[in-house]
Image (cartoon, rainbow, N blue to C red; front, side):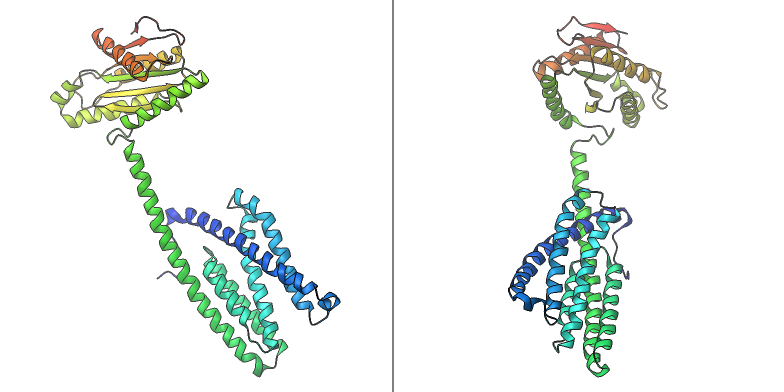
Length: 382
């Protein structure tokens, strides 16, 4: 059994960030409550006039004023802490100082109330609140509770006769043990809940990826391409950026499947996908459109750049030695450039050029609309 509940190693960093966010949120809410609550008490206390500064009233004034000032300081610092690096020392200090401040106030007030014969009620309430709410710092919490109990015990033994001090000291000790148990139980529940939610998030993310990913080649699939095509064509029109489309079709792929088997055919498709990806730039989009056909969106690529990329793809696949394929593997590529035509026409132009490549001998690229401004006659480059 783990004394300190912890998430799995791969979730530790995410849990730490979630804990910091939760603790800072609690500091924010507690600061608002403290500012309002102790502010009202401070105003009411100051209405006593000079009596508010009498020796008997000074402890109350100190409690009210310190809580108001500390709450104001937190409210001033928290906005910048929430947007800064969560691992910085300043954020950690702000995160942990408020529980320590509450524990200190509960300790001091408990000594005072015990001297007045009311028992260590602030210690009981304060430790329970801290134990239930502070997340991700169980060892710190254990140390804080133990130090507070030692401080209360020392203060009571100093201020009261030993016979009168023993009862509140034992009460605080029992409170400390219960707070230990509550803190560990709360942390265990938080870790368990976080683990379940993180696993659910990871599975949902995996499902989202599978919805737009081809399971064989790990490229994007046709669904993703359709959505991306609409986005990039709209962007091309808006910013007047060039956009090119390549349709890549494996030559005589049926013969590869028939002669070498479908497993070899799958290996060929995976290798071709890798070779195509190696020629891509960061913003380009490669998808498996279906069967032995791939589509490529060349974002902000002019005609010359698109020609160069298409020819590199052809050459890299022609040079590649597909170990288990009995015949030479090549591809035919059709190229079209977007100039505002309907998306169906854009796709059809590239598709026509791909078939023209096959008719002219395969293992080549046919270009349509090489000028971004105007469509040109089909051009074939071998």
